[in-house]
Length: 114
Image (cartoon, rainbow, N blue to C red; front, side, top):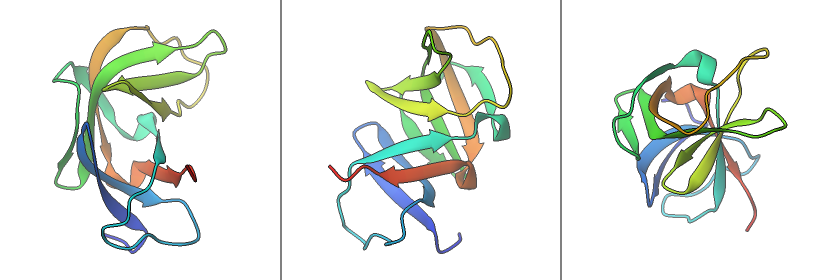
């Protein structure tokens, strides 16, 4: 994996993504982060459980699709929302259980500073 890819563990499981901050974390550091996922780089499948897991060079996010009135799309995984970045306008069903599998480099990890 590239130097900017970090592996993480959370209550929902473990995964990896591109660290989006100038200062790279050290092994064992704890950070509150937000995940941002390029859903167009992945594929949706029927619900396979609500969790985060790493499968070789892909991250699998299992949860429930959510949309807001403003058109924002997220995947609720174990009570936390992962923002999805759909390309172009698209109608997304809400409250549908799905799993999204994306390449590790399509997951961006942003430290929140909390």
